[in-house]
Length: 261
Image 1 (cartoon, rainbow, N blue to C red):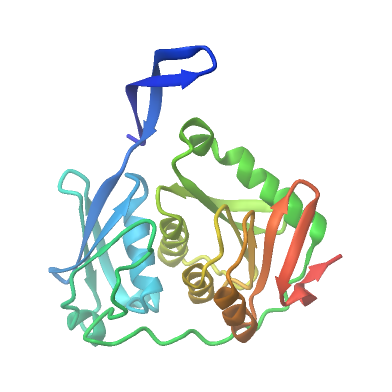
Image 2 (cartoon, one colour; image 1 turned 180 degrees about the horizontal axis):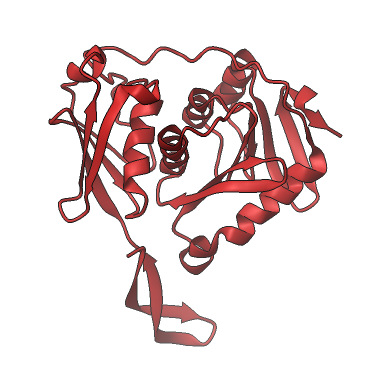
């Protein structure tokens, strides 16, 4: 269940009156890796297996499909149990328990496993080019698909696109979670990403940029603004960043060579 009804008091120019509102649901998901409790994610109750796998990919724990053996979601216990290849030593040494809030994307500590900070991803080499008109069309389609946001105002949205087509659409109370869900689905279904684009509803922070880089996606399209650190990373990691993609306008902040104007 993604939403729940609630009686509220609403005040406007006509005074106070009681109405029924639709409230977005929030839950937690505890991630166990090889029977060890690793992290607790705050999220929406949908596609949680994708979320857990994508989170571990973004943390640099899962790198290849053969690293992963099984994923079992227990929705009633709000837990997901992941078993990795025995040869994956890093996952076997996971001992840090953290609570990942939807606003922060990760905990206050930079430690991910065995006291090791995830290594930065290498620059992305991609010959992908896309027309500006296609970028505007994809951003408009993301907004059209965002029905849960339109009903509640309480979720973020992201999509993976190829050409003019959206292949994967995700929504969650946490903007970072939307990208982790896409990453997890791509990882499990072995979907290539070097010829794809991310369309995103929120601000492009350094964390969002790094999640895009770890997905190996060369173009990041946002309806909002980027931060300065995100753009520094984009230049170094060779990721094209577009912001304020709304209506008939857009701004290109990094690696404009992939955009056909």
